[in-house]
Amino acid sequence: MRVPALIVSPWIEPGSVSHKLFDHTSIIKTILLRFCPDALEKPKLHHGLLARLRRLGHPRYLGERVAHANDLGELLASTEPRPAPDRYALIQDASAHAASRPKGAAIEQDALARQPMTDLQIRIAAANRELRRLGHPAGRP
Image (cartoon, rainbow, N blue to C red; front, side, top):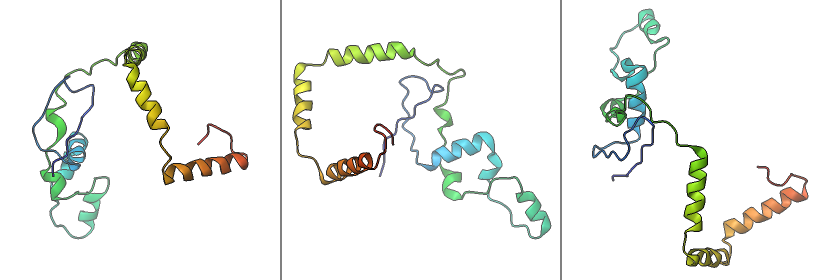
């Protein structure tokens, strides 16, 4: 089963798309390739003190799946990271977007708010009331 993924990084070109198959071990392989590529090689069988000394301070071999996974290196193609967008510009854009929504969207949200609570929501609300009764401050986890 293929699962689409979004890879977000200032080191990736905007709008880039990869059709290569990645999996969860692709992240591990990318890190290992960058910081300790020897960990991707299957260890040779050595016995005794020399073998133990070679393993000290080196990451353990993580197996064939990691070794054969595609790494994300091809996506990290920028030579310089993109600068972060201005925080206040993002907030203003979000406010403008929210203000430009059709009024029907707010009505739909009100309709969702009027739906009966699920069992989980009821239990969370009860737990919240109990915490307040016991003196736990509001707005705290």
